[in-house]
Amino acid sequence: MTNTYDAIVVGGGHNGLTAAAYLARAGLHTVVLERREIVGGACVTEEIAPGVRASTTSYIASMLRPEVIRDLRLADHGLRMVACEPGLQGVFEDGSVIPWWTDHERTVAEWSRISETDAATFDRVDRRLKHLARYLQGFFLEEPPDVHARGWAKLRETRRLLKRFRTIRGDEITDLASFLTGSLGEFLDRTFESEHIKRMYLANNVYGMHSPPYRPGTAIGLLFHLLSGGDHDAQGFFGHVIGGMGSITQAMASAARRFGAEIRVEAPVARIIVEDGDARGVVLATGEELRAPTILSNADPKRTFLELVEASDVPEDFRAAIQAIKMAGPCAKVNLALSEEPHWTGMPADADPNRRSLATLVPTLGAAERMYDVAKWGEIPEELWVDCVVASNVDPTLAPEGTHVMTCFVQYVPYALHGSTWDEERDRLGKNVIDTIGRYAPNVPGSVTAMDVLTPLDLERTYGLTEGNIFHGDLNIEQLFFMRPVPGWANFATPIRGLYLCGAGVHPGGGVTGAPGYAASHKVLRDLKKR
Ligand SMILES: Cc1cc2nc3c(=O)[nH]c(=O)nc-3n(C[C@H](O)[C@H](O)[C@H](O)COP(=O)(O)OP(=O)(O)OC[C@H]3O[C@@H](n4cnc5c(N)ncnc54)[C@H](O)[C@@H]3O)c2cc1C
Image (spheres, rainbow, N blue to C red):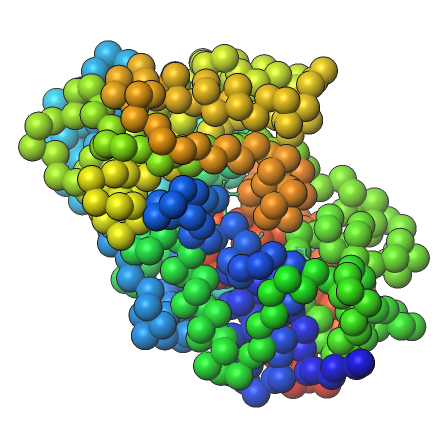
């Protein structure tokens, strides 16, 4: 049987759904094909024990674009977010619990109790970083600058860049250069005196990155995390999603359907059909064939070009560049059902449930560097960096009354283990995470009623994330802007005519933003108009 569409989207992650919704809204007969039994990719809510639902993979909504929320009317489709307050909270081994409030002045006041000097520095640095991040913000929903453009196109690109940077001052250019190329660790060491405050910055700025804090290029996280998001386009927004992160993708799927898109689950694509250099359709694992002149792949670049198309369908150097994309881990996730709420040592007695929902067990910069080194050689670090969110404190619908669900993101574990396998080490990782948390919240180990451990291998197997990489390719400067996914192909199009990438592997990168899906679908619509 042959089914014909205007556009086929391979993968129903949040970017695939976003792209499909925009294409369907523009009148294109569009189908989304998702391999799993649910849509959402790495943005889902799943049951981990009877009646206990968790955001099994991504867990905080921070940079979801307001344009996407508005255009797709996600609120009408059930999306509701509650701002995290504080946005981040460090819980330390000495019993101190330090919040980073979303209100700038409140954080200055809070941190002045730790160090007057650092609080004054934070006041200055945070404003400066937010200002700088705004220069990059404009590129978030559009194509990155095309450095290969020629003729009139080159002139147009130069004008676009000049427009974005026309007000930039010399000292801001030097700042930008140093944040884009410098290391987070060195920046923090020369800027702050308190170890705790440096750790607060570390807590937020290298998550998911394949780099230790003293590696050049890691300071870019400081700007990336100040790009705006949420209904009100706030810089540095962090939100709990009611019903878990899956509510975002359920709302997107519902919006896409409302615009006329068809969504099929349990429909793994085995191959993209390419004829004479043109994408023509897909073949499902069942052998069923679907035809369309436009295909968008929400699968990561490696999966798309190394598994779904024939090697001979793309130039050799392009394929080699895709093969060289740095991915390999470096994170895991442990989701826990708990019979009671964690009692964090040092948490103020008057902390409200929203505040009690966040606890980042962040190491020192030196310890983080050592953890990365251990993981780099294929070992699981003994000391773990764990980011805990007790979402049921804000959203009681996630667990039966009186019980809780806690998600734990683990930074710096290898994808490839040396001398062992993740199938052998999965339980040990889960136990290490629980033991680690027990040192900060002694009641947790005794209250775990169910545990769901997602190693990098599970992220690959279950969620289709090649090498377990949560961003479809590391977010380092070599793989960002006009270098993403590979130099020369940063505008969502690919060497196969009619085949586009629309997932986190393309500009502007990973995270639940909707930005790649938005930008790729708009590129497709522009190209179709030209044709
Ligand atoms: C453990 C973890 C924690 C994270 N935490 C956060 C967080 O708190 N906040 C945040 O903003 N981001 C977070 N992220 C990152 C974020 O979730 C991802 O970058 C983002 O969801 C990627 O979205 P996507 O739509 O581009 O791709 P995906 O979500 O990866 O979707 C791709 C889809 O394509 C499907 N697919 C692949 N191949 C095929 C095929 N052959 N046929 C059919 N379907 C196919 C997959 O099954 C999947 O559904 C986290 C990610 C992970 C894994």
